Image (cartoon, rainbow, N blue to C red; front, side, top):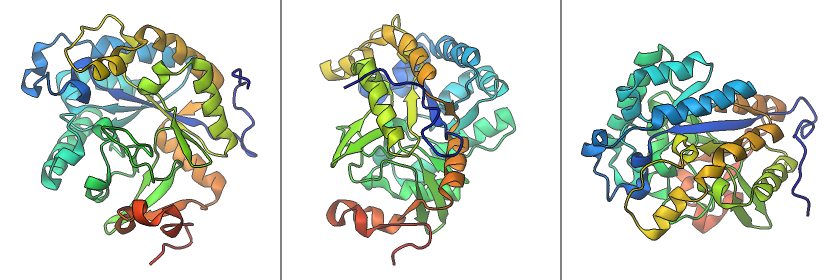
Length: 327
């Protein structure tokens, strides 16, 4: 097996659809793994490192002439509005990442909407631009809170990147599609673009960034991502500014949480540079729109009312081409 793929310039018959490059703009003490040890009311007491780490990412992207979607935590935007404006000024797409980084399945719908609107309105006020993309804290749109997708539609969002089609102890919907698909809700539709997962013979292997990017050998990650391209679809990659910061303060937590968070931080920047050498990237909305143009409307559609039936009925009975949704 070769782990030395060449850049994916000729995967699609037309001009290549780029892959989505995304950043969750949050600090090391915001992550869900440490929420039991770090009280949200005391966030301001921790030394902030998100500005410097995000600027390091911006410098890498600027040097590589690549644009990304930055999902910005509302709390970060409130405390460092100039960072938001800097991200916008460098041509990147802005998305909402909640205000308080609270997992959605721990909230009631009204509380989720309040948090969502607060973060969206703040970003809109700071930039003068509408916010169309969303990512839940810790990919926390699961079967316990499918209602969140309709609220996103009602609040004007067009793209979501929150449903991770794998099993994980903190998130995941293993039965969900691995590619781009449209979700129909009673209030309208929204495009779902999940993080990269390579699927073969029923096996789903997450390889879209974060801890997986730091845990796997780099050659394996690149091979898996190229395998996704050979399946005829773009992938979505994600990372966090704190993943480029091996000097960040260490926080207490379980052995598993600390392993996931701190493993191989010193390698992230180098690996990211190699990733950018190997693949084409663009913001989420541009990737989705270009993919739709090349697919000429032949995209999977999933009805919100059928999401809860995924586990018991299987995908084949609920996914339809754009021409119609099963009644």
